[in-house]
Length: 142
Image 1: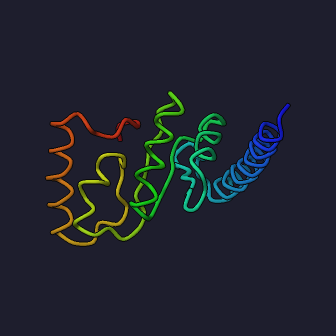
Image 2: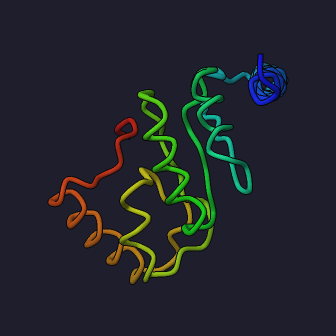
């Protein structure tokens, strides 16, 4: 086994442990609140983490990922799409500049930070354009 393979396996094991711990904490919080954990969507924020982490998490069953910087998110979403056939959903979670709308709609299925009408219009126009060009996100429909 090469050092890279061992390192990859170690990282996957670390991600699996951490994901299990987070899911257990979410389940406990839901139980305490009288909620069903299945009602929630766990989003892994992958800021500053490599695309390989998102691929490993998708392999572990987590398919929602959040990013807050388009210049990091766009290539990462593309790399994940090229690496796995698992449908993942990208969430844009940071402040979004109107001029980045056309880029974000190509990979993000959800934008959590819409804070002005001008941005709504820009996202709508960009989404229509991306759909017409066949460049809509390939994640699950919401």
